[in-house]
Image 1: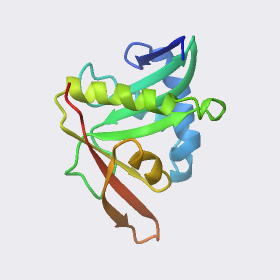
Image 2: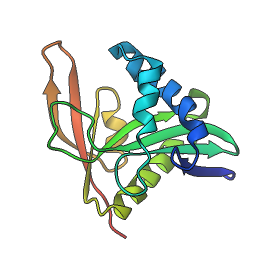
Image 3: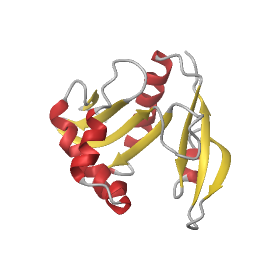
Image 4: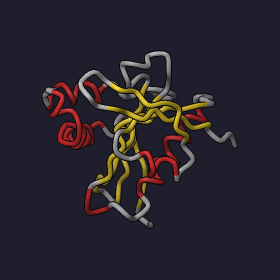
Amino acid sequence: MTGLTVTTVRERPDLLPVVAEWMWHQWWREQGQTLEQTQAIYAECVAEVGAPQTFVLLEGDRPVGTVTLARKDLEERPDLTPWLAGVFVVPERRGYGYFRLLLARFEEACRAASVKTAWLFTNTAEQVYLKTGWKTAEVIHRPDGNSFTVMRRAIPQK
């Protein structure tokens, strides 16, 4: 995994359109969000420490993945913070351990902000997160029939 670095959209605002497009195609488009609205949301993820921050994994100069440390991410649980959000690796680079690199960078950011517990929600990847130390906290059932698993992780302090 040589030639891999992690940066932020704060440090590299030129990467913001790429991240926004990934997020829009993956999740936000189906929710009726425009690409421009998605980009505006991620443009705010520029905290120096703590949430919100968006990290981008680079393979050389090519962006290949992203993760966000978000203040909030699930309307049913506004009491929980911060959240692991927007985890994405380009399809052709999946299976190379990039997901774990992004999680490690997320945890570093949590430690820097003295975060003891982080949260995420998923409706497709619970097993993947369980393998990386996340624990199921609850399942939320929405009136529209969709369900989400809320997960938590104690952030290892070094």
